[in-house]
Length: 448
Image 1 (cartoon, one colour):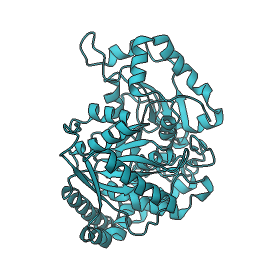
Image 2 (cartoon, rainbow, N blue to C red):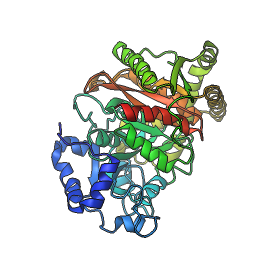
Image 3 (spheres, rainbow, N blue to C red):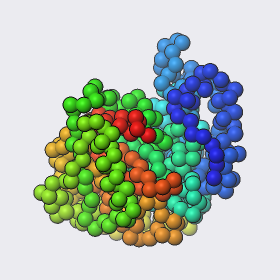
């Protein structure tokens, strides 16, 4: 376990501005502070040398002004394009079999951060082709939890979550199709953000299932998450008053999920604490029975439909490689993708209709609240590797798929059981109403 002290976004900015040699030293020394085996399972490559003129070259600000993320290092999941680098998706299919070419331009989210002065510092490993929620990958080695190598980090954005939780960088990019940001954020005890679905935002990111793919990020604390949202999302604004503008959030546990008792207790304590600390800004109530029944009626059918749509789209992405390069894929990943070729066109069409029905229900629930919907992100707190079984995967998908099908913004916040184990809560809000997340983050920022 490293003794590396986490540095926030403001601290990195200040160091860049006031002590460039020390900034360079912090970057140079980071790999040596970790067990080499664990580092290699989480980080594909790390750059010690950021061009000295980086901020000036990539900043839209006027002369003499500091861009908002000047000198802030960030890591990218190995499915985002970075100019001049090969995007590998932590798979030899791309790096060896297909021999993918270096990217000619940055992915959209990478570009947005660069133009604001942030420094891309390397790439992180992931579940192969983002297909998985456990951080396991036979090609690169399983990405462990940063504080206990016997436990999982979660996936598929495993390396990015590991790097932020370990304090290597204050910000790392991930993608989320069915929970690939929300799950590792919960299990690593950090914050994650899955934005509203928008295909423009995933430009330059290798797809898994385009109908559900989103490009987001991790931060270690609420202050940094607040800073990034404020800069990248026009709809995110701070509440003007500390009281008198109460947001009501509805808590919901989908049918078929049984939470670990300790995690359930921790969630109840979290709800009590944030309501009290918000000083009148946040109230959490159960989802009304009428809405619970509506979701329950379509839940199992929608999960089946979600799997049909997702695997069909994944197969379409890989259809030219799946058979010729079968031996280059992990068998489990190959099988998951291969499912998609076997669905009939009628089944695909019907599944699309069912997914749309679930989206309609979730959006209606959100519009009836002044806050949003709160759903656990995982059924258990950070499990040991051998404890990850089919029940864990099925229940985790059951918790995360509603947000994916709805395509709404989701903030994942950690719920700690102790110094190592954590679960998380998803906070869903309507598209273009990300400001509803502000009181949650403001309360967490002021009380942690």
